[in-house]
Length: 435
Ligand SMILES: Cc1cc2nc3c(=O)[nH]c(=O)nc-3n(C[C@H](O)[C@H](O)[C@H](O)COP(=O)(O)O)c2cc1C
Image (cartoon, rainbow, N blue to C red):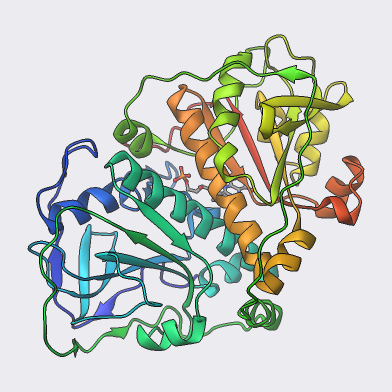
């Protein structure tokens, strides 16, 4: 297993104020702003202890396949109050910023005071998940993007994600280790600003730690990454529309964003049994995804939703309706299709996210493959937080049988491919969870 933490050796490490105020309290200075933003999007939020061995490990605000966290958060700042302009790497283990360089970094021409560069270290995922790891890395980026975007939104700030940028130029500018690839840029605006620094760029050594002495190559990961680097500018085709026969009620919730983000966890399993979610809870969960749905469609395996017969449904976001595809108990099917994971059958509802890879690649070239997975990860993040807001539990499911899902849902290649599974329900208690 490669080292789960990336560090830059010999660089100044800047404190981010501990226990920052909730996101609704506007930060008056740069350090507090950064601390809030990262505390509610990427920081450590709990620990688990394995009872048999006493082994302790950290969990973060953003989820990650296998808790392996291939995503690194770098950021360039310019004109942020009480914070030197420069290039930083977030160190989640101590909630600090490693100052890799000072000066101005022009990241793809973006002008916001903070530009995040989310990168993936595929090896950190591939040693366990092999070729499939690339997909997990992309989904994890989608989660990290939404974690940042929603924290910024809760702080009353604008943010924007930029998927189309020159990968190699950004990697070179940031002097990234060759094992680390830039995947997504997220620019964030704040009022805690000042005039930008003038002066030259100064690097502070900035050598990334070696994660393993030995790395097993996965040529297909390198190949798909190289193929999806190519940029292809064209307008996206319109999303498919349509409507179903079941109209969903309007959503409602009362917990604060800070609570929801910091207490979100993946359920180990769900209670099963007969306890149901209400239709309005399902509606709230689905409503949270609507603004993101572009290349992804949600298919639901409904097990226990009040007033909704068990079966498979397709979510039609335009009119907030559900269209029934299949009737009958789907618990065995949902678990079986999710690589035999019981949690997909014990949940109240499980999902197959079906990505229209054809339409994405027509619009964006092979790079569109990444975008569909970012979108699915981002939708997953919305589902996690919506479930948490309702006092329910959720789990992202990256392990499923692709071809069997297509057959079971009668999907033709033109209708899309499964890119992510998800489950929501009543979580069982996890005795390993400490905080
Ligand atoms: C892309 C992705 C795929 C995942 N796949 C699975 C899965 O197949 N089965 C499972 O039990 N958990 C899965 N998880 C949940 C992770 O194991 C979980 O996020 C991680 O252990 C960290 O725990 P936390 O979410 O409570 O922070 C997945 C999470 C993500 C983000």
